[in-house]
Length: 414
Image (cartoon, rainbow, N blue to C red; front, side, top):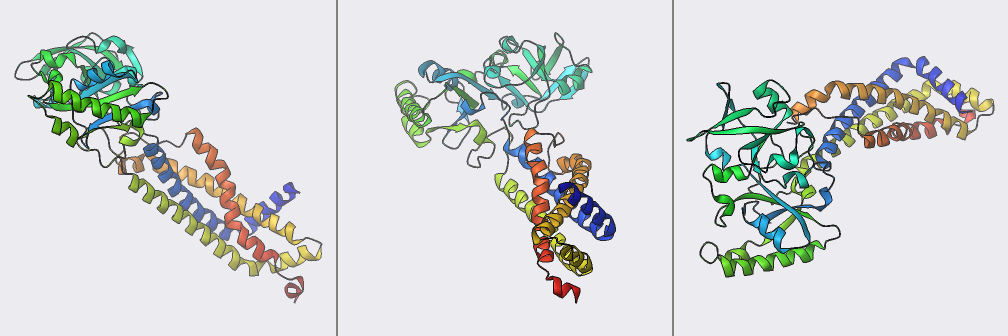
């Protein structure tokens, strides 16, 4: 029976080709727009999910500020057994000097460079192409580059052992120790280069050991099954006492109480509007929600357009409906037939919509300010796309199907 419905569906698709063409184009545009928005939303909502330990990574803030002092990271790891690993990154000191690198008498302006300690890659998962990430940040004047940055400076992907000059009031020579693959597009931490944190002291900056300079962004990797609220309470009380006991000359107990330490899940940081002084990428959850709403509304308008056209066309199919009923077709048979037709139209529209979305994906990515092109190849995409085709077909065809099947045979024959 299904084979019969499909056969009749394709026959009517061709018979009413002008109407079918309008329906397919209308639905395909709505589907294409929704697919583009869905790709953007998926990219935004999956930020930092590629880190295997993402659920246990937390960012530390003092009050609403991401600024934290350099010694905080080491102190927390030493004093709290619930914390498996700590790390901190910093970029402001690097740009206090001239942000220029020199290689073979060619100068390169630098962007998105951090200093990081050796624990950075124990917490975060970035793919190494060359070198040893576990050792690359242990030595002074060592540097890690992304693949694209390595090509930009050295014109090759494997410049391990090459040296370049950090131009400042005093020039410093750095050695390339590792190359990582270009960062995933859904990473909140964006860098082109990392220099070892121990290099900072060698360059004349002593902020890493000074509680008075809050210029670092600190991350914690907690052990499994840690009670977050209890740990956060313990951290706050401990720091208040620590400030009171050891840091009365540079920081006060009142400061610790006024700006208490807070832990932010890594997955929430990207959309956290209340987190200030943050150098990592930030997103806008409201924009994602608005765009998704717009995409759904546009698709619904396309479906409504299909319903209107199909209902208006019902008068041209009265003879067909009458003959089918006279020959014994029940309302149920007719409903299934028209739902099959709408599902076929939805399938064609989905294919056309997918092609349109693929063609516009790169331009849409640039328009939305995303460095890399979005993708439509996620497993979750296929999981929802295929059932979605038939769902759209059923939603679009349900009213016309019942409307046409409900026509009375006597009225049709008259």
